[in-house]
Length: 562
Image (cartoon, rainbow, N blue to C red; front, top):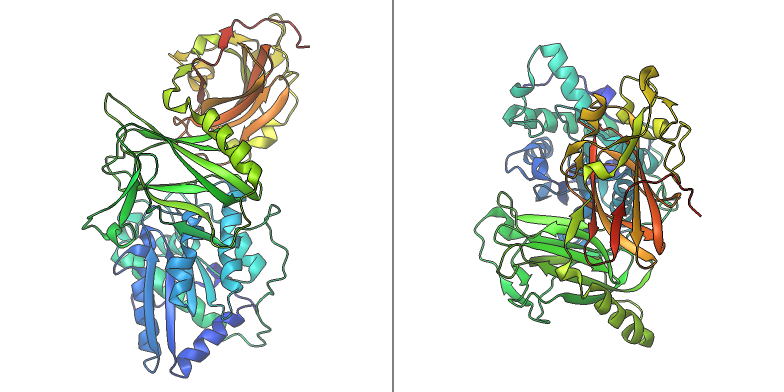
């Protein structure tokens, strides 16, 4: 074969714990009927890609067996969606083997969330009456891929873990070939690349079943890595109902996605919000966005948790899963369409992502008396919420700080946690100087940038390193929790009145895209402080606050907070 001389042993996790693979190959040897399911993104979905090629290798090696193949790859999705698809697209296929490929599409997922997703998938499959053999395939990227979370889960549960990044890097070095010889872009293999993936995976399987003294897979009693627990009954809830002007309609798509998305719950012409009670700790939505318009604001129990585009001109759907686990109780999901012009928004919901709602506790009486009306009240103004961006010049900035290291963005918390002599609860004295990055003398200065975007890179001449403190004084008419929107490139601690109320220390997508941040404010004066560290490609931020909530910005003063 084309890559027959490749030695991949250094890139495949071999151990005595792969008894599930041994049982699977025993079925092949004895001519049994088996089902193999591949779960992943577009790299998996490819019609004649590594998944199909691996099945062909398997059928050639074991002609006596009948091998049913189910390709459950969906382009552009990661393990956060895979958790909810597991029952319909994997478990109901009654698989004997499941190969999971999510490393590339999980790259922007928070470490804690990614590990919880993977553990939930593994534990649910391992808990089946006839658990399938499990394999992780870690695809490669031209710029490298963060597969550490996948590696950690694979080690913890004794799963064969195939590292294609190491294999590809070694092959290109040894052969003298270029990335384009194996890939059509930075992550998608071409025909040769898929062949390399399939052969590497097949060699990894063969090496494991040949090991002696196999003692069995790890037990399900292993303590999970995820301290907040797992989501073991996630499902796709088809919203085929009518409510408050929203109506479920079939979708007549001729594209490949029509296999998975047959209809949508569409918002009405009056722009009314949709309120849905649900039980459990997790919630999300899937939107069909090619023909949608406007935006969608998502709230749980009256609190805004995200705002997403209901229209994307170059793609067909969008998956959003709230990254934080909720209290294990009854909640209200509120979906508020937001128009981008004079016409009503057209929001198309393909699925609600919840835990299984078929066997949940009865809704308590006070839910309808308290939680339900309060959620309606709190979200009643969301359709009219407009945002005002804080001007760059309203900020008072101190920086840059931090040690000189080669790749400070790989562990930004190390530099952000150091004491530079500044207090997040109090703006620095105008006359005070501080020792900054590379011996610089640092003083407080006004923010600079384009409109509302504070361009720290331009201010300091550093584009991929450096810690900065940004201070803002604001007034609130009433005390309470206020939703702000923050875009930051890239890492941040967010303080309100000296208390760290939120952090953005993991991947959070496009740094120019705002994410909701809840700030608890007191009536009267407040100081907001952002402690930020540049990402690998820039440095800057923008903060927006809601109009008509009684918030105003005032020049920074030097008065110590009470």
